[in-house]
Amino acid sequence: MTNINLIDIRRDLHRIPEAGFQEFKTQRYLLDYIATLPQEHIEVRTWKTGILVYVHGTAPKRRFGYRADMDGLPIVEETGYDFKSEHPGYMHACGHDLHMTIGLGVLTAIVQQRMEDDLIVIFQPAEEGPGGAQPMLASAELADWMPEQMIGLHVAPEYPVGTIAVRQGILFANTSELFIDLIGTGGHAAYPHRANDMVVAGCQLVGQLQSIVARNVNPLDSAVITIGKIEGGTKQNIIAERARLEGTIRTLSAETMVLIKSRIEALVKGIEAGFDCRAEIDWGANYMQVYNEEKLTAEFMSWLAKRDDVTLFECTEAMTGEDFGYFLEQIPGFMFWLGVDTPYGLHHAKLEPSEAAIDVAVRTVTDYLRWQSAGTVTV
Ligand SMILES: CC(=O)N[C@@H](CCC[C@H](N)C(=O)O)C(=O)O
Image 1 (cartoon, rainbow, N blue to C red):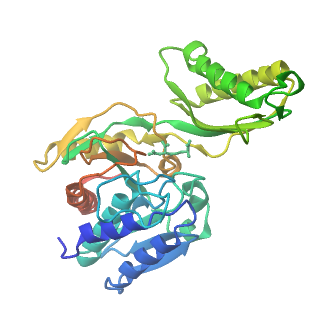
Image 2 (cartoon, rainbow, N blue to C red; image 1 turned 180 degrees about the vertical axis):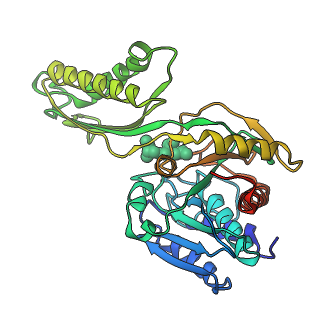
């Protein structure tokens, strides 16, 4: 395909993980690489810290899109890599370094040997939060370059390299972030009767939240409420005036999300009454489910099944979230899982995805785009 060293690129990107909408070095790195490609048939735009690259086809009738997310996570890296993150407390622990590298690989292949149709490669910031897809889709930069068909992928630690897992319909859940501040009265540890302990209130609330999925959601439906962070108090012998819970809600339907939010509001009101305190709920960023358009996904799956270099696996839905769902709400297409064969899961400090998967993905996406563009399939 190409003589660029995608492994080196992935390692360079791995060294510089950045928070959502702070991907300045990442954007610079990608732009510098894109500038080394022949420029005759490409146009480049930036949007915030994201990038849009338009590759003009030889006889375009349609415009395809491939999207890669760009941001890292606030995790202290514990891999055995000699190319560890150089940004303290930040790590590419969700595979976005691979997603971007694959984007550059596909871009390079299509620039080197253009297809008939147009391709837009989208590097999107802030997938982990607060969400870059929705504002990017509403931006002037994308408005006149809107793809007619979209592809996205996500690394999957649990599958061997060479496996592509996908399904028609819902692939990833609806999500909502959840931030609850509890505000009471602090005081001396020895005088609990004169204070209003928000650590106790916060702990009770975490316990009560577990009852929503267990007792309010239909057992044949699926939902998750995870509280990933608790903060409260200032010192071991001071009763905490404030506590803060931070979490996320996952559902397979919009209706269940509404139900869960109303139950959280009711339980929080109960805590306010029971502890005579005040509470503030912030729902943070909400992501649309990732819904794979049935016909295109079925065609992709039958195309994959005929290949002998990949193994197709028809997977179930996952409760992960992805703001790629907003692309698929407006543009027909699909997302698939790419096997990267590593014992540690996404968002783990020891995640070491196999780099051999990069070549698998570049080949699969490029061949699929060429096959589509050759007119075998119409949307
Ligand atoms: C693939 C993946 O891990 N995505 C993230 C998306 C986060 C959405 C939002 N910030 C939230 O926490 O709800 C995930 O955690 O699934």
